[in-house]
Image (cartoon, rainbow over all chains, first blue to last red):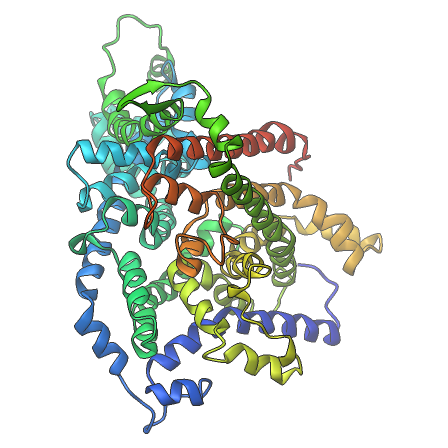
Length: 279
Length: 316
């Protein structure tokens, strides 16, 4: 640890700056949630006040739940996100194991090929992806989204997981081989449990862009039955733009689950980004 | 044991059975990734060389690019989108990344109280969707609600308030700053991690030599986190030249007012998918996607072969 301590004055400035920016970061979200709980007059007259007994109103939420199929949107988002992450992790871990465990011809090349997608966004292929999905009859299905997001998640999953799998001890795997375990058993029963923390990190990383994506739902699955929360709230808010109660309630409904998950997983996420640097 | 390892490593050994499990492990990822990502990407690049002539898809060479760059109907939109995209990127580089570095530098002060809280709170907007962020800021900047004028009044600047998102001169800057607000957590975290990785001995040695405070930050810490700054820059570059959601949410597919916030992502969407009276045009969509691909490829190559190799890395 650094021995030179900050002078109280400088540490005061640092706290002022950080707290100031924290307010900037949190204020818009807090403001939205607060006002979603008020009646229309209060939203405009006292936007900064907490909802009181007089101004408290859930009218926005009742409008949203009556008019938009938000429960359905949530279900769609949940299905798409969970299944895509599952396959990206499973296939990604398998490929990462092959690349990190075995020496074979083309290993390097395959690793590079699978890494292209880390830097080149999948969106650039949208024209042909849509064409392919039309040909396969998958437009307006959740399957189309799941396929795209699995492919999108794979490169980073393979990259991160193969780094971690290199750290799994060879002695352990060879002991398994001597005990007669097949290569599949070594992967599923020995290696996978050991890289679980890395899998969690990859899952959180993969989840955020999938849950928040607007582009592919808009293009591949814009139908009412397949709308995700992100697209659903986009369309809903666009239609109810003058109904402030409904707009604020829809935004709060979209924020809430993400916020809860973030509070639960923020340590995991931040540890993942900073890769062990955070002590 | 050692013999087991060496036989494992010896590929040429002809006596051993084919190792099918390698194929089984690789195949699912390879198939999904190739079928949904790489082949469509290649097909899109190929489509940019074709166009529909008399109802038939015909090879036209670089004609689509000539139309995009030179023909009146397309060129004006394209060059404006490209210019706007560079401005969008420049604002991120000038505001988001220095702000991220400053926040990271403050967070990494040893034994700073509340650091975890600040870190978690400041990163929070990054996990929200562009749709949420876009609408929230649309409401906050709206003259109807009056939140922004109210705050500007507190500091005596109310006279300077304007509906920024609605004015061609300021809309692009306003949208870029919303994006900065949302994404500043990424440079902050990556540089924060790099700062924490600087060993204490280096800092102590600097202190023994009397290098402290500001000069320590500029002369010791900043050069040591340059690789992380390079990484952040290329991530920003790829993200910005691929951006779409925020502008679509805040300004619509036409990227108003009057196309002032149109970037390559929104242009691609309108061109290929069609919007209102404009019909979707697959070939021109593929052409724009190809241009975006080449821009991103150029940026990534410049980073990988130019910058990343030259930045000196210190092994601790």
